[in-house]
Image 1 (cartoon, rainbow, N blue to C red):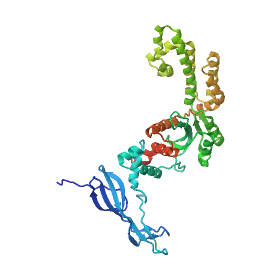
Image 2: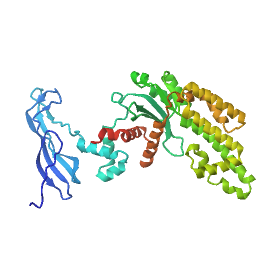
Image 3: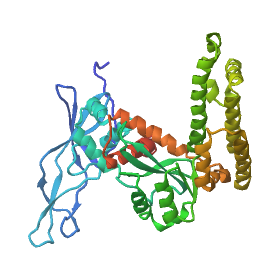
Image 4: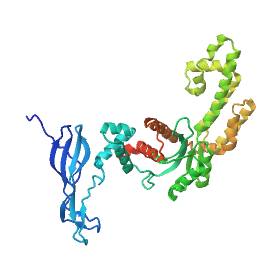
Length: 417
């Protein structure tokens, strides 16, 4: 039996033949190949030409690894002379499996783009021994800097939200995304700020059929987004996300809890202070999610503070309205009844939220139509935060759009599986 058995592995490159195989001292494979095409198109007149005129300088292109070894393809592109043009210019044969100015085959570039999903330029460059500039060039060739509307799946719902590029600074960019009818998430745009004028300008760039097809816009309580949508998409239903709304009324109740905790620590004897410990999360959690121990701690806390008990009951009642109202009319009616209970209670912790209802109540109540939320937008924001931390900050909105697109759609586009 041979000590060095051989196997045949297809290159998966069309219309080439292997002339020579060698192994360098560093273990890399060098495969010398040539094209089997016997013609090309004249770069001037476009006709098919066959008269040969030698070969071009050799090119060394990195290809997909084989058995863990680096692989290079060495090729000397054929040259042809045009018999029809006046000065008979020569044309170098162009092949589909690599770009004329690239240092890698398209198959290897696709492999690198796949490695870049949920990773960083630095990590992939280190693992594959490829420069940052080369990887950024591949990113530009494979991932567009704006949406291809013709290739996008149909969608009727978009979401608008923002994120700070730098923690602790109000350096916001607006993220506009869409959820397709199959549930897939797509980034539509990363805008440099969240000003109304910026959002309006982008919305006006939407193709007419896309614009008329948008029926729902999910957003938080930011006037710039809301007025921009009302101006450009007057027929779309604006839904203020219920979870942003919940944060407002829950924050008010939590403020009351802090006030009451300070009062109780001053008023109660020290022996009773133990009853106040470990009550934060039982108070914040929904009643149906509490276990027996948490329910007991919560009951002890509420027994000491009738005002806090009343606020807790009203908070949970409002959450139940958002969970169970099955139409906008039903939701508005139940919100009015809830408001009456708040006013009758004399509590002030809901004052800011009641003002919010006065201003945006109709758009908040649009949630009750189809119970549409911005959960897909928040999921995208979480992915963006991870990307931002992983890459140690991404300040360029174009690069941010490309990287988000790659992380969201990369496996669908590039994975062979």
